[in-house]
Image 1 (cartoon, rainbow, N blue to C red):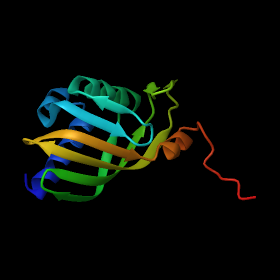
Image 2 (cartoon, one colour):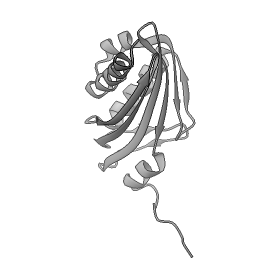
Image 3 (cartoon, rainbow, N blue to C red):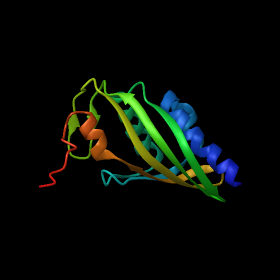
Length: 147
């Protein structure tokens, strides 16, 4: 695929997620898609498992939206710098625990990098500011001890 088509494919997956358009999701990713999350160390294999993860994020942040700040691409891959925004209104499942809804808003910087195969996304690497998000949810202090 051309670099422009790679960026369009990446944007489509983000839009599908924000709109909770799960039927279109199936057309965007390969059945054996692999998803990795740097902030949590989570690794998911397969479209069904990845879909469940996305549904969980959407349950936690039902008004989630994304702003694409920048994008770069070449044949068969693209990287998008994004900002996620939403309100934590449902349980958020992490690899270690479930975080009950806080009602707080988040604004989280991230990079989503994908590789494609035959016009679908075959792998994703999502690097997001998990510590910043936890601080915004009131679960940790962002200040650092300089003394």
